[in-house]
Amino acid sequence: MREERFTREARAAGRSDTGWSPGLGQILGVVLCVILLLAVIILGVTTGIGLVFAVPLVLLVVVVGVLLFRGHTPRALTVCPNCNARVNAPAHIAEFNCPACGTRIEVGGGGDVHRL
Image (cartoon, rainbow, N blue to C red; front, side, top):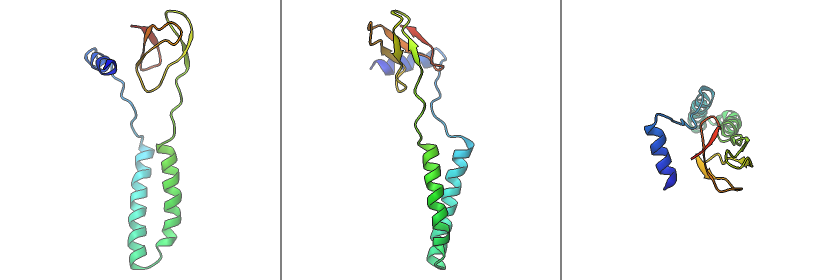
């Protein structure tokens, strides 16, 4: 496929797009959720007061879920280098065809575009 070819060529040229990686706050939130989940299970089975921890656990899971799985901001509209038409570069692919003129366009890591 063309996307695989482009990815191999970009890696060979030393360009890399690292993609998504979780931050320290997100990792800390997941660790806290796991610890609280273990506390809820242990206290719920042994003492019956697991409900006291269950409510904060549910709230923490919702907050962490929102932070981890929120949508990324879409790429800004850019201009085709061939026909100067405004183009919305898709965020999930690195190269695509201009909808106005059909020119093959490559999108760099910073959102800069150039013709292939």
